Length: 88
Length: 243
Image (cartoon, rainbow over all chains, first blue to last red; front, top):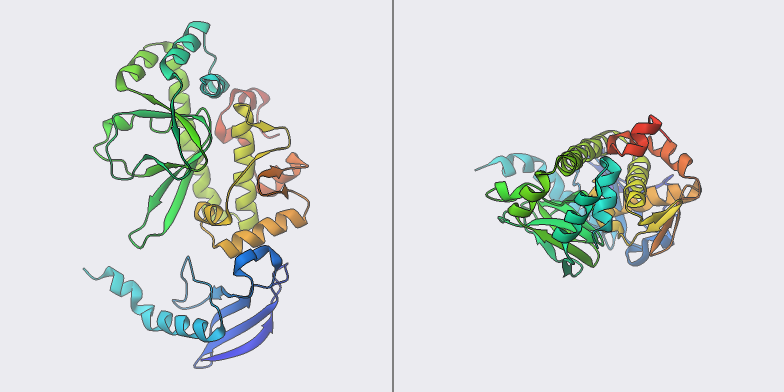
């Protein structure tokens, strides 16, 4: 997995972002929560957008990019997750 | 204690004095619930009809993985589960969001109330409005942007709380965490945070930890595409709609 720095327009101080690429394809956009309004979540990384199965309705926040990479890896492996949860 | 119920029902249908006296006698002082305490749990049976007298609660459903969706707010004057004694098991749960005072009525009480034509009509109205609110929430979740979604919810709370005397012309007491708001509008807490920030940035709301102020109510309603007619309060019916 590869992370490319990107600036995000969020209308807040959350600007520091990463494009997460898997085999050269965009699978997620991450942003660091730098706006003081995030309180205790400040400094953590948040999933701003996800593609192709990286689409949790309640994604966790990540302490660092390694943690994000681990979670994204699980999500990719689990793109069959919809099949898993459909299994009896 | 019964004033919020009378306020709510009268906002839907006029009540004769005798009916108000009966309501007052039936409702009593109610029971106090702590924050987070269940009114009825999802899956339980209830013989009791609960009516919110003071404070606020919410309806919710829980998913197998523990996620929660809030599917409605309960404000003073609301019948929480008017005919739920008919159900074997509740299909959703209800809990106190703040400290609450909740009246507990029996099926016999409801039969007494619905034996009176004006009260029966008012209660039918209140159930119609509950369904209308749910329909509006469905539209809100499916078809509005995050900031409009949050704005719509705030507009609805403003109008519903005003009817029972719990909101001023420009705001109300609101102790609602971003996590609760996220569970309500189907967004992450980060998205809710951004939505609130956008509304604040546009000058549409002002917030403290305990209160929400809406400096220009008409502007927030426009931003939210909020048309109070779905709440069916007599005021809006008589005015012919959008304020």
